[in-house]
Image (cartoon, rainbow, N blue to C red):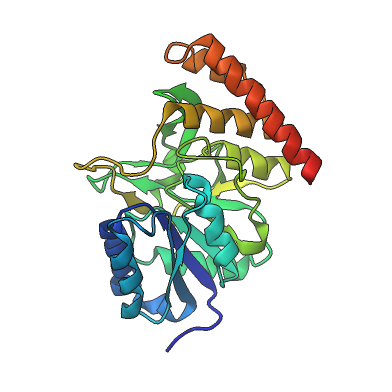
Length: 286
């Protein structure tokens, strides 16, 4: 029976990854059947005219609680804002479209939210590696390989029943919060990169926390033999980092220090000037 008012929306943005969407949603439907009457699925297609678009549109016919929303104007991993905008649930999970959730984890998350209905915190969980043994609970705030954040492990999460604890940041393969508590990625972001750390700091600056829920365990497909299909440029990544830091009043010096070996000074200076103008224009319009 179709649930017109789900408690939880599980949404994913995708760019030519029907295979990931299919297995993520079908695994949830098959192995988390105890909560399907409280859940809706939401697919944000960031390339609806691509080769995977028609299959994604057809997929919604296989479940009454699956919705499809095309979005081709804003091409970015930050398009995950649309998940929260379109969600019908009181609470929302944003997941990459190639993630598997540990059995029972969604039920535990729903129970957690029912006991913490007014929470404004951002919630994440341990990412379990393909060996089913090792896991990472957070990102340490360090720069490496054109990215802010390196995987770290807090042993407190070794027990799935352990109490939630604060983390500095985490990879955004899976994150969750109350729909009305979502603070949003900056709509100026384009392409891939810049969201990790940015959204966590945004929640903190608004008086909230980022929590690791040890029971909220997930596994992420990293391997992509055919490579990513979405737009992936160094300039977009640097631009997003600059925009996020400027919005939150953070020092941009570490960005320059990290990327200077791969991008000339004049290009970084040009990007910074452009981003300053964009942020100022954005603030004036608010």
